[in-house]
Length: 243
Ligand code: C5P
Image (cartoon, rainbow, N blue to C red; front, side, top):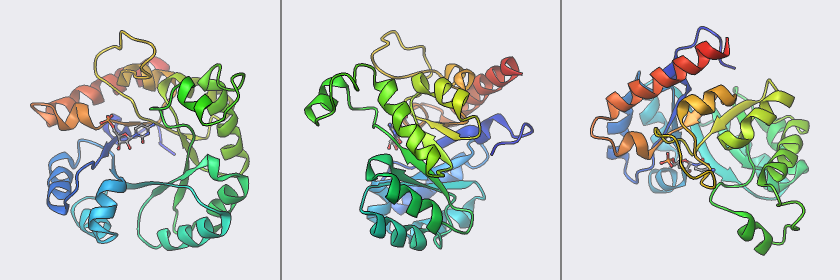
């Protein structure tokens, strides 16, 4: 967990959403000290393989988040998490829709301080998408309810944390205060449209987020360094107000 003395920028998770080792390492060197966690997703992992982890670790001692959103049968999850425990990453994502048995296997087979972060419903899915997938209309009347139901399963099975939107985080944090909450969908400006589930760093931290996944607002900025500092400023302000 984050201690009270941790620096605001340690809460920023930067997704290395690029496809080459060269580009990924350029970002690691550039943002070292300005963020707290580097996230390796499917694109980079598929293109570079596990070797990228060692290369990142040579350049930074920040946390590494392997975001593979594992979704499989319990036995495969167990065997895969054992392998991942040896890769030297800090967090791995497992999909809650893999079911309780798979989540328990993930938790029980993790070692070397690997934390299991549960994924619930990806934010690109809206109510209509979920109904098309067979979720009943009552359950998806409010996506928050479904996310909360899945969060409860993740908590009961012993997962360490959860990926959720800023709109869901306050309820999750209220009921499971020790759960690590990782929140994507962050934009620097206030969102005018409540339907797009985005929040500012300030709003998300105030709502209870521990970590913020922020990619494009940093990557596409004229000065990514300056944006990281602005984000850290918003985080600091929210943390002070929460005291
Ligand atoms: O800030 P930006 O939208 O560029 O962040 C994109 C990153 O956030 C991607 O790496 C994506 O995998 C991640 N993400 C996530 N969970 C979501 C939505 C996005 O981990 N629900």
